[in-house]
Image 1 (tube, rainbow, N blue to C red):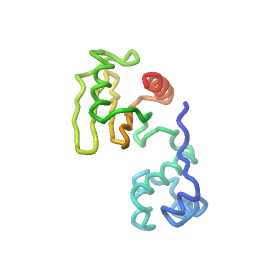
Image 2: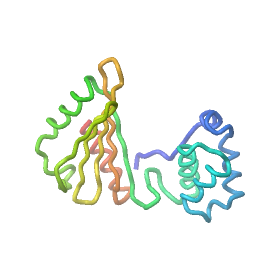
Image 3: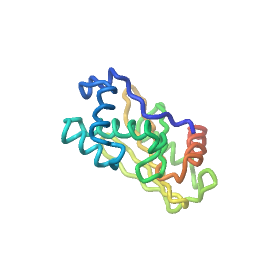
Image 4: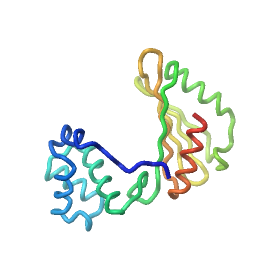
Length: 177
């Protein structure tokens, strides 16, 4: 699959946590992280090492990928997520309307039937479009203002059954974009 393993430069790690990756590898070794579930590892990083919560997840996922506990894009429950994004011209509202018009009354995506009509919502900073598919996966699209008449289109496809399907979905959505 084309999903890359979680990689963060030492420079970014040092800026966020004050320590390079080699330091965190030692921390994982001392806490015997190989024997701990994801949540417990992340909690220990947060509580015992004062790591910001997002970085707890980033460090834990990278560790789990390095030891072979999970593949890139795989969640702790075994399902896979993929995401694709693109900056497009226009406002958030224009982007949402364009997306809805572009997909029309589709009853399926990539050969998988839609489970129920799409739901939309909005906040002052975001526009959202969500749909559930018959295979149990779901597609979430967020539109956010990038300024200068541009919108960031972010698509996340969650709860994909396996790595092979995740690769197929990634290619499908990139083609759609």
